[in-house]
Image 1 (cartoon, rainbow, N blue to C red):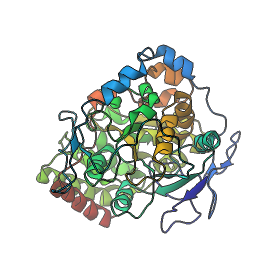
Image 2 (cartoon, rainbow, N blue to C red):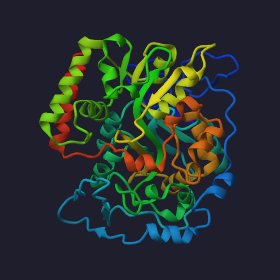
Image 3 (spheres, rainbow, N blue to C red):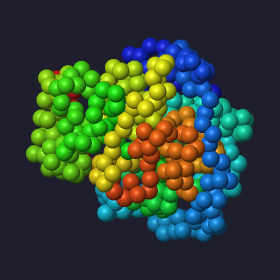
Image 4 (cartoon, rainbow, N blue to C red):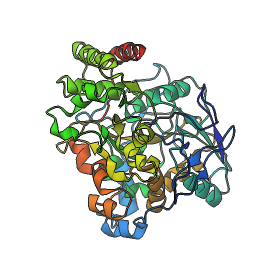
Length: 459
């Protein structure tokens, strides 16, 4: 397996400050074996050792409401109504902006076909473009061994960087892992090929609402990868429960935590948090005045608390560099493995309102329209959607796959998540009560970016 693409300006190869991913620089903890997980230019270390006892594929399927569904019926429902858009003449049509209230069927193009049924996998290599270390090395190596191929894994440091490289054709990839708001841009630019669902029988293991999602009806171009909630990570031994506040996000503006506040370096999500804090519940608002007011509120943080906007929040909160963060649930799940010796996971907390309303989402797996190994790419997607492989991956990543047939109690019983972090568990009901980050019209997105640039300039 070849790991590529250290972020410019970082040292140590793949070791570096990457968000939504777990970079491996922590020293070996007592009782935890440190394993090399990257090669080339330096090695990063895996602080995790013995894994929790997971739920087996059999146990999942026994509990699954879809275990009895025939795969023919499932795929038949997902592959119907595949209208195509002619490619000649008028350029690339832009699909409408998708939302849960406005489901979108993405267009198909005659000059970007799906692969045919029944093809044999290519000899590789399989090129993956993803967040650093966002697939467990053990899972990658298992696929390499099963298919006798090599995987080339190229990392990116943030979604803006990744999208720029894909849109400008400066990276070669078979598989890419974007967020949902970027999917329509990729389809409109013909950067993706449609999926052939006959290669993906394990799609039946996924929650029904994500097998036929509002952002890609019929799963024409994407399947879900991991789920998360975005909320308040905090040190329970230093900070009171944010849920006791009338507005929990006020915790970031509390001068008592000066020097200990860390926010996500993701403009849509952090501005979305500030919108909610300033009384605008819609994290995707098009109201320029509201967006700029949220930006002004963020600007206050520089003087009030000396805010940090930096990656690696899971490590910072575990080691006490931060006491309160705006964080993805998976990162807080992972923070327990960076705690100093003698400090237990009970010091960690994650607040997400039980009534919902804040961000909850998933990222995607898609295939390049220029993929050199598209059949192999389909096989890899199906491999990740296998329940055993998915649980192995989750046991390392801390981000939860949207598998059917498992309850919150079962996640806790399996040992993947400590009781005090049960709020990191993502359920189908969370998706119904929360809100995703949506695609925006370009002129509105530019306002968000301008506000973010001003905020970052003051840090």
